[in-house]
Image 1 (cartoon, one colour):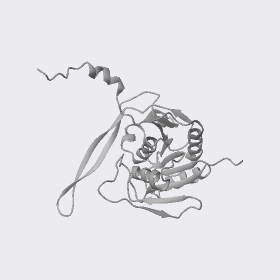
Image 2 (cartoon, one colour; image 1 turned 30 degrees about the vertical axis):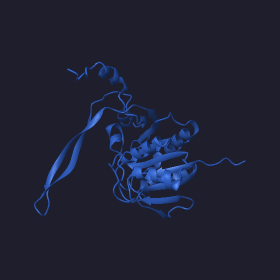
Image 3 (tube, rainbow, N blue to C red; image 1 turned 90 degrees about the vertical axis):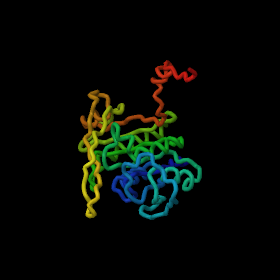
Image 4 (cartoon, one colour; image 1 turned 180 degrees about the horizontal axis):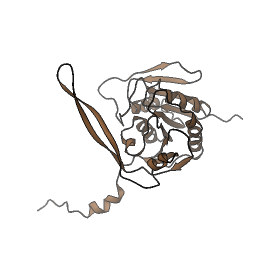
Length: 258
C-alpha cells in the first residue's frame, strides 16, 4: 500500500515570485503535496497584521506542475487564514512552512516578521509550523546550502510533531553551514532612528533606519549560533504570558475601596 504524501502549505512574506519561496516549493515537492498561498507582493515587516475593512482576493496562478498556487492580496497571516478556510476548506494541512525569507528573523526580529507571523498563524490553527530565514537580503541570494537542512527539519517535524502551541524559527547563516544548534532567542533590540527628508512639495517625510544592539553574550542564543556558522532553531510559542511575573503582581495592592 502506497503511503499517503503529507499535505504541505507553503507561504511567505516576500511575495509569491520571490526566489526564496521557489526554493521552498522545490524542496517541499520532494516530501509531499504542495499548496501555496502567498502574498502577491512583498509584505516584509507586517508582523501579525490582518486585513479588515477591505476585501481580500485570492487568484489561482500556474507556475509549477502539480503545485496548487494562489496569490493573495493580503498579508502573510491572511494567506494562512484563507488557505485553511477556503483552499483547504477546513481540512488542515499536515504542516505549514513559511519562507525562505530573504534576511534573518533571529532575536527580536521574530516580532516584526511576516514570515514568522504566518508560521505562528499556522500554529494557532494547530498545524505544525516552521519559519525559515536566510542571512542574505539580495534578490539573487544562493539558497543552495540551506536546501538539505530545510528538508531535514521539515521531515523531523512531520515525524515527531511539535508540542501544542509551539512552532520553530529556523535561521541560516550565509556561507558554509556547520550544522544545527537548538537555541534560545537572544536579548537584543533595534536602536531606531528616523532620517528626515523633504519631498518635492517641501513636506517632511521619514525613513526608518537603525542599529541592531545585542545585549546578550550567551553562547546558547540564535545570534551566537549564526555568528559561529550554525543554523539556529528556536522553539517559539504564541502564548505571550509572562508566567514568572504572576506571583509578583499578585503581591501588589489593587484595593480601591478606601
